[in-house]
Amino acid sequence: MRKLALSDEILMQIEKSARYIGGEKNSVMKEIHPNDVRFVMCFPDLYEIGMSHLGIQILYDMLNSYEDTWCERVYSPGEDLHRIMKEKDIPLFALESQDPVKDFDFLGITLQYEMCYTNILQILDLSKIPFQSNERTWDDPIVIGGGPCAYNPEPIADFFDLFYIGEGETQYRALLDLYKNDRAAGLKREEFLRHAARVPGIYVPSLYEVSYKEDGTISSFQPRFEDVPKTVKKEIVKNLDDCPYPTKPVIPFIKSTQDRLVLEIMRGCIRGCRFCQAGQLYRPIRERSLDTLKAYAKQLIENTGHEEICLSSLSSSDYSDLQELLLFLIDECDERKVNISLPSLRIDQFSLDVMNKVQDVKKTSLTFAPEAGTQRLRNVINKGLTEEDILNGSKMAFEGGWNKVKLYFMLGLPTETIEDIKGIGKLCNEICKVYFDTVPKEKRNGQKIQITASTSFFIPKPFTALQWASMNTEEEFREKAYQTRLGIMDMLNQRSIKYNWHDTDVSVLEGIFARGDRKLSSVIQRAYEKGCMFDAWNESFHYDVWKETFAELGLSMDFYTTRKREDDEIFPWDFIDIGVSKAFLLREWHNALSEKVSPNCRDKCQGCGAASYGVGFYCPGTK
Image 1 (cartoon, rainbow, N blue to C red):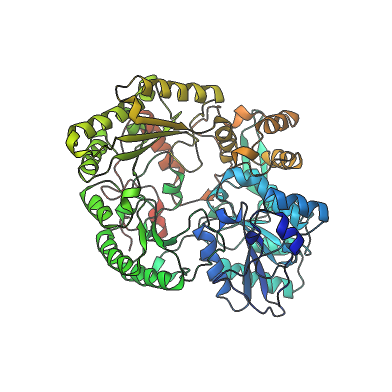
Image 2 (image 1 turned 120 degrees about the vertical axis):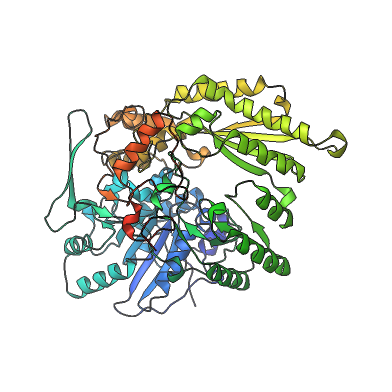
């Protein structure tokens, strides 16, 4: 019988003890044999956050399909358990076997959000694994990172042995085979890492040297050995129908943040928004076939007890067989009493007709993401959404019985003016006017129009056209949020408009980590040692400690945020090839400054470079 790592006494003391006991429905238990590989997959945040992540479910399912591999899971312990584990010297453990993480061959950490970086050190600390990769031996797991933040791994490079760049379904088998062979041959850890650097998509930070100019920018980034590649090319799945998909996902004992089934319909996006990192990272566009999705949906519903299924993609409306898929799901889910969640839909008549047929649709709001308050600024970011689109969509929604609209904007976009900021309130007001013009008073049934406008702060991300942009200061962000609120208060329909905005401090630090270099590893480690952890949670975020730490180490926060980037600057992530070329992104940056709109992939190929993978739904000359 499996013995729990935590005593009953401890489990009774802590919040949500079900986070730590494992044994969930569809979790995998295996008998391990000599020379088998033990892999523990980590999401560096709380269990209920990590259990909502599709990527870990995919890799967990795939790795456990290998006869010689047992993949388990671990998440960040809550702060209550963290204190107890430190006090009682309890090592961090995997959920399935309850064995110490340090006993595994691989510790894989998914990097979804920059503000989880100190939690990576929490995982290493509680596991008794040295923070610095150069201090580890074969007594420690190989620490490998992957996910969207791995596309600029430099701020956390010192903490990782390897990074997997790209989609995880393609090269893990080769990496595990290499590991087994090198261990059987008695090779040193450093020899394995050097061999691993030749596996496509694998980046080994210790095998590269960075030199800097006097102004702090990078002068060169070079491999230390001739057999180590100068660039690391992103891995992609070329045919989504042929890759693993978890039709028996692990079902948590407690409610997760996204408590529903996930049906991934496509990867990539045709839209080309210049601020959007995911839209570039996941090119070229690839779709799952309708037949495959139908089969997955049936299996997911049969193998779980979830009451909702969600379509997952960056832009669900652009899936070519969307109408047929939705009609199938409506029939299937209605019969089984399962709700359908439809994010990322453009608001058109077809979408509204579908939503009218979906259970519980009246409980939700319709969502638009104009991102900017004026058409001029939407052209700068290549949003591809006009005010006419928004107002027409709102009109159709109001005619269909909706009276709640959510609008998402960004403040601090390049070239932004006070007119753009005031435009947020004006657009909200125009939507209110559409409601009053569309729905006669006698048909409102006492309902009022409700507009919720939310603003986040623009953070330039790697591999976007806006990666050259300066970021606003904290003071500028606060002033812009204040001006947005004033603009809304000036509107005739202000009582129907609610305004929410994000914290400035967290946005500044996220901006630093997003475009940071290797010098930041020392800051992150020092901040963790001072108690920083769970920085993504407002109640745990200590901005004063971060500012103090930057000052102690002599690093300028403004260098990473407000500084102007020249066109020819070498970025910390330039050694990574995502298919989309830097020349294309630079062209789009200049198009942004000229307020020039670029067509989407469906309308006209822009020659971004992603066709080099030989696939792509809209890439010329590919299948």
